[in-house]
Amino acid sequence: MPEEKFIPNASVGSSKDHPFKKPETNRRSFLSWLSVGWIAYLGVTGGFFTIIVRFLFPNVLFEPPQSFKIGFPDDFSKNSVDVKFKKQFNAWIVRDDESIFALSTVCTHLGCTPNWLPVESKFKCPCHGSGFRMSGIHFEGPAPRPLERFKISLANDGQILVDKTKSYKWEKGEWENPESFLKV
Ligand code: FES
Image (cartoon, rainbow, N blue to C red; front, side, top):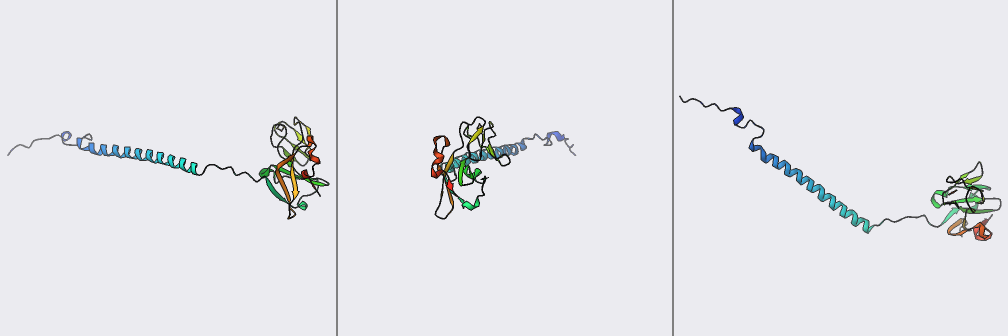
């Protein structure tokens, strides 16, 4: 009987580095390169379409209208400042004993936005401390002139119409202009 030949395990494929494993490794590597390729392709395509969309629909600034209705004269109480149009329209609506007027919220020093302080009955600018009376006249701080007023009138339906395309400066005597206030 012929003697059986002893073949050690190490020589018949027990090793992890067997050449038959190589195609598997190559396939994995191919797949990962394919994924990278896809990601790159999608990135470039996405960027391209973003540019096209931005070109077709450019950024448009939606600014609030320059002319707007604010309600009826009776909606505003005497000797008070209405701040509800400050954020959207940059205007305060002030009613004193005999008139209603619209004040610009732009500080005449360097353009910051003051705050209305009802207890102290003044507009106070947070930037450099300018103060303005309810009328808009400056009285403290570096602001060189009063706040500006906007054109104000009564619309056909009886509501107050403010038009910011026209403003009136006290130092030029423009507050005398009947378009700068509404008699009530
Ligand atoms: S910007 Fe208002 S005080 Fe300077």
